Image (tube, rainbow, N blue to C red; front, side, top):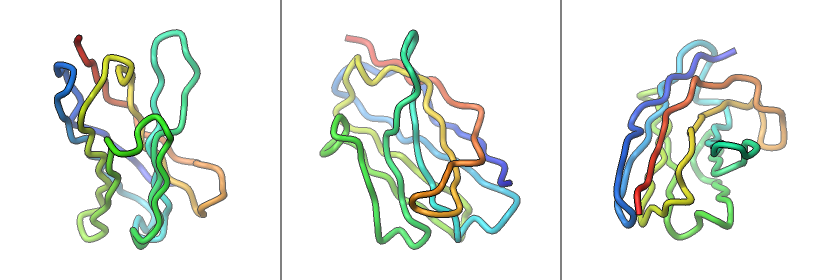
Length: 119
């Protein structure tokens, strides 16, 4: 498994921006697919974004397309989620996760970071 630690969450007004970071340690980070998920109060966890090991392939949920950008810096063992034009409905705990393959199960999870967007 890989150990993941998220940071960068906080309180922001609607229309604002935040950048989340996820630092990885353990198995070779550069070969993992990395994803971001979120869970709002009373709701199930949902997929937000994923990025391939090389960064050449990304996938974003429809709800965040055009507003969020996922990227990674393998030399720093870090994956990022740039969140722009934030909306109150983006309020959730955001988790990063690692998978061995694009279609595989995410088998390592961080502890999460809270993002709160005020209206």
